Image 1 (cartoon, rainbow, N blue to C red):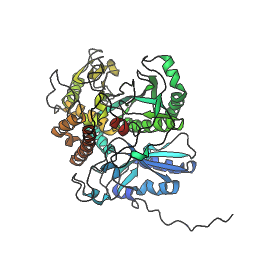
Image 2 (cartoon, helix red, strand yellow):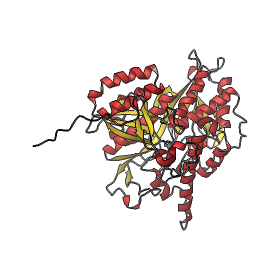
Image 3 (tube, rainbow, N blue to C red):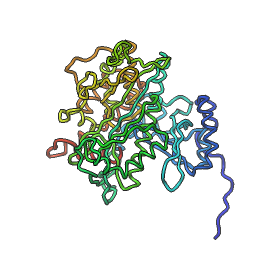
Image 4 (cartoon, one colour):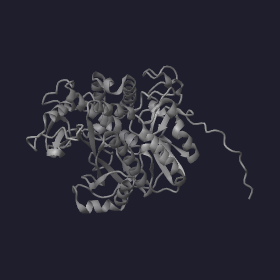
Length: 494
């Protein structure tokens, strides 16, 4: 058989030569990690270079190893589409004239540069090819951090803690649904920009509603046990896999991590869970409340504490092991004071607000806190050196950098005494995406996010809310509960 002999490739057209070195984008630790991973590239076939978009969805390009070698220090050109589209892929930010969000580089949809973070390099389990996964950070072409990058937001928040001699610590407890995929077409007949395809057809894997019943867990163990081994094999500090209340509802928990590591872990966990389940003929969804009969809402509880320079837990009371220190109470005050203004960053979808309704007894609607009380927004638990807080607000599909970053930011304003007044006892979190958007616009989100990202998120979420309102207005009567629009919009993608 004749095989053409191709000439040697021209220099790889990725990023900008020497981009990392030119702008000093890596720490010494990242440089050392880059050298180690370069030495291991002979053991992989492909590299998936990813970043987290404003919605919390992972976007990627799969590179050949030679292309990745070039991108590692040059960066990789990426389209800004993920900053422009809402959750249904409708254009929400005008890129043809003036984007109007304070990022002129979006005009004409010109590329930005994604720089791999060598500290996040992983080899994914399974698959026909040996595929690695690595997170990237977004930069403008002049070397400035991209104003719409959510990972940069969390990095700035962590830097503010470091400036005060503090380290935030985060634990993840997230619920999701495992369902069995049924045969059927992908539903592309109805899709398009701003019109999502029909959700995949699935069936429940069990009847649910026997909380933590061993038999219920055993019914999903054929999928979740191998998944647990895969997660642990990736170095994620897996603590538990549990069966929750709903049919096939699984809770996955991780041991505490540094804040940026925790957000990276959440992004990797969601991607691996969805991919591993799909390869076995199942569908995993982090949508808060799927539009399926008998399903219960899923939440994401973000556990948090703060250590000082000596490693001492700032929330522990030195005189009473069952109390919260004065610093801990100040941190809680920040969480409560900012709860309405920053709710959008923890509950960013139309669907997430079903969980905050009166029909669910454990919904964290009341803006308050208490020890060992699952009905309030912030639950204090543990004791002594293990004292920490559990913020119960977030939905599982939220952007991890924004959800974690906003809560840590709020807590820090409490520690600094700049949080503002704590709402009264009757105050509640917003009850809809529209209400949350209004609170977001009235709050100081720009101090956390920067004006461009705050404006961009507002455009994205306004587009999502407007499409839902337009669809709802066309229905003869809107049934109670989760709508077909929500199920199409979120169930497959998230």
